[in-house]
Image (cartoon, rainbow, N blue to C red):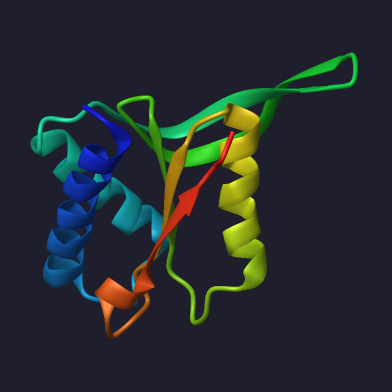
Length: 125
């Protein structure tokens, strides 16, 4: 399954979670529910995935943590904040670059309109 197909399934799962739970919960609640829905949709999903980083000659075993990694191809960064900041967008771009993955989704569940709170991020490797 390609990244675009995976992201289509993930978006459907995001809508299910948002419609069931609404807004106002902690990120961990949305992450757990989203992981469940993605898994139920038949995709391999892991949560709190710690990845290493190499800087110059230094290898750091635990440098950053992905909220969700779907099919080892798509990163999902889950937020529940009043307003997404530019640092949130930069964070997922950095994760994509360091992991050498192509696609990420940034989603903020603290919203009235979930459709406008899902942001697709692409790493042009």
